[in-house]
Amino acid sequence: MFLPAASAAQSSTPLRDYLTDKRAAIQALSAQDGVPTSIHTKVTAESRSGVRRLRIGAGGEFQYISDSGRDYAGYNLGAGSWDSFVGVLSSAIADEYLVQAAAANVPLDSLDVVFTSVPKRKSKDLSYPNNLSYVAYIDSPATDAQLQALKRAVHERSSAINLVTQPQQISRIDVEYTQTPAHRDPSLPPGLRDFITQEKRPAVLAKQKETETGSQPTAEPLVARAHVEPHTGLRQVFIGKDGYHLQLHDSAPGLLGYGLGPTAEEHLIGVTTTCPTHIFEVQAAARNVLLDSLEVTADAELSPRFGKNVPAPAHYRNIRYTARIESPASEQEILALRDAVEETCPLYNLLKDAQTLEGTIVHAAYAGTAL
Image 1: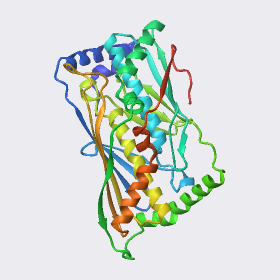
Image 2: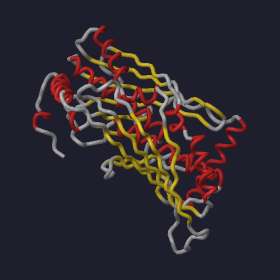
Image 3: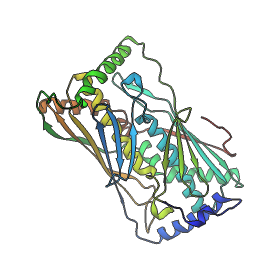
């Protein structure tokens, strides 16, 4: 897709020009009736490799691969759920700074948000990203007081911050189950059950032994940086200390989006779908439950961000998960598997709990080349 010619125009202050256009778009939306946004994501465990393919949108318009490292039977083909979660939060907060700066007419010349999290073990079988914090690097002629007021507006109005700092009402994972033959046709190529038994199970048992003996290494901090492209407001997200994995987020169509990537709000629901998909694999491996296919979908509504009489912040509601499973196991075994996933899935439980999130502003351009 080609960007409009105006977006390529040379300017000494391209981000300020972008925010001027953004302000006009916000004013137009604020004069209309607010409409909730429906979000749909689907994750498929891919056959012999076990990688999780995330599709975002009713038609799967945007796709990401989520994978594990080799120590967990993955190939590092994509960022894991925890790393992606931190990356999407950095992008969502950067986007909120853009929106609130445009609404308050605060000029910005550059914006980068570095987000970090230190995972915390909640119980023997459950740990998840915790100690959430970010640093917003802002190059701007605004005063420190103006930027602090901007930060307060971001924390008051961000749907992403609301999602993680307020306990969410989340449904149980519905299961749609189809029983398959105990023995696969030997002429078929290796599939998901081969990945579960031959690769994932040994890796899971090795990690369980590390936990039991206390030899499991301390979890390293998660880190991601969202960089705002000044002409378009697109956010490039560099995940990990070396920025090895890259993601792209766009704004919603009414907020000058170009349809080049999902919104951060959509992708947040997406990463909370890749996580239970992976934990279904983990628990199936631990329990020696064979799986022939696995698909997890999530649906949610996001209340209007702008419009007449729209309360702040926009917030998620009706978050619902469905797992579609084909397996030779019994229905009772599959339901027990679902129960174990709900008890141990990191991001599923993170959203059910209330987290703390701290933010800091550095009144200068981001000077680093890596995280």
